[in-house]
Length: 204
Image 1: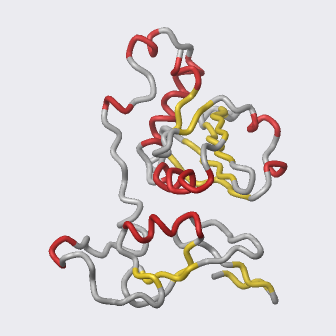
Image 2 (image 1 turned 180 degrees about the vertical axis):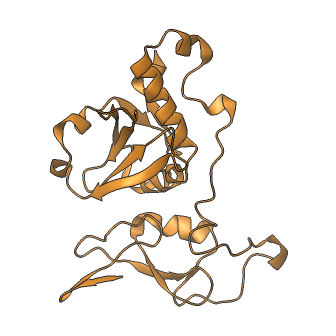
């Protein structure tokens, strides 16, 4: 929970989204002790991962030997997703005929799909439906790209830096599409129900 002056902003512990005015959060205990806020979009994820809802019985419903080791607040939820070869967004024949900018777009999509953020987006999509998405290269010598994923009431932007030790980072988020600069609203990608991003060029 962040406090600025007299205003109190409540943050979802799973998707890290600021709750909208009037939006009701439910409190869960990830470790059975401290309570955190979870937005309506992420409550199913919290339940699936064994978080205890406020007021619920504290007796574990999963055998002890099946419970995950505690690795911090979000580690058990956002365990890295390893992208297997068959999950790449473009097959080898398609890759051979793509231009350099298109290849960079495919690489950015693969890096995002192998990151923790894919599951976050998949969870939000369960409640809000399919979002709009774009993949846009940034100017400069670092060959960075930005993946924008947006619904009518919330959006996320991820910066993809293929040469970085942490290639995918949350760059920005907001609540209104008007907050997104025009070039990033060139929707040239699709989001699958599991959160995977697929550029339109890979569908040719």
